[in-house]
Length: 209
Image 1 (tube, helix red, strand yellow):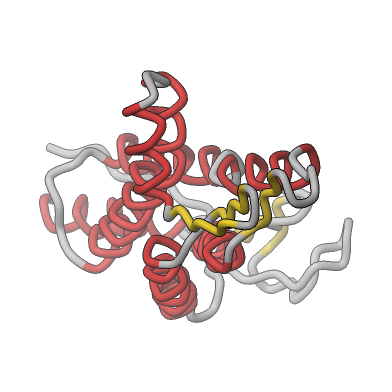
Image 2: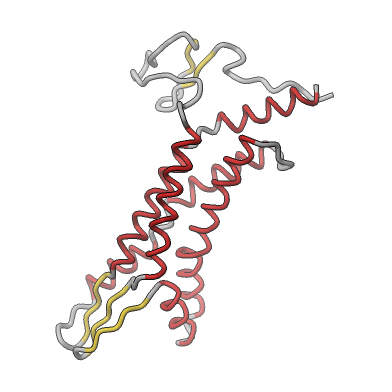
């Protein structure tokens, strides 16, 4: 027989997402910080999917448009993210190529998939244990802050490589779309109320009771 899942909502309590104070569910605002209290964030899943869709829309031109615009002796050349990775690989910089590929392709795509999976797991029954789903949610929030590596590299190169007519590097339009994609994906992960994951576990426990 499954052990019942104990939740704050089941005990008539509500936790503040700003300061962490636990208050009675009847309270409209947190007595410590004044934040509006909700047992569950209103329309959380709708906001998650809307922000994730915006992130995905921005991610497409981020990969199709040039990330770097290099001008050498008056000759301009643009490199996309994948094109830059291939060029680094051909020059023998395998480690740098892997870091750029992981930060620009593997991590963003994995975030899209994981967030969609978490939303699916909230709406429908899945076999992954509840604590694994929470770990996935925490991993997405943690990794999000490291997804701007490409933008940082572009900013550093733009600041350092400015030699006039000889050689210069400027950010391409893909840098803007990539930064927007990362921002929307981070907002999507933050909009997901992890308490909904525990609610799904509570429903699954009730079905097996």
